[in-house]
Image: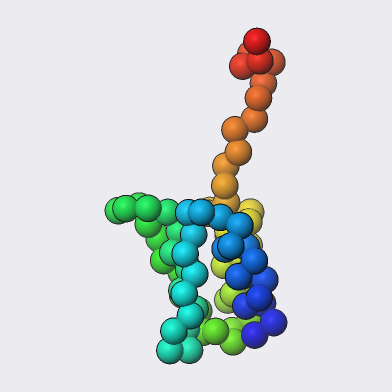
Length: 74
């Protein structure tokens, strides 16, 4: 249950993520349309929630930032 608040903060910072808590489960929906992915965990399963946080921050569902290179800078 300690990680649920951390997950809330991570989700609140992203417009492409929807987090829901219902019936003892937390669900996180990432993306839009047919490419949307849903991740689920029990609301008090800190281990699984921590893995979801990691995926959102650093893993498969992390925001890929565009970096300026010398070729792109005028």
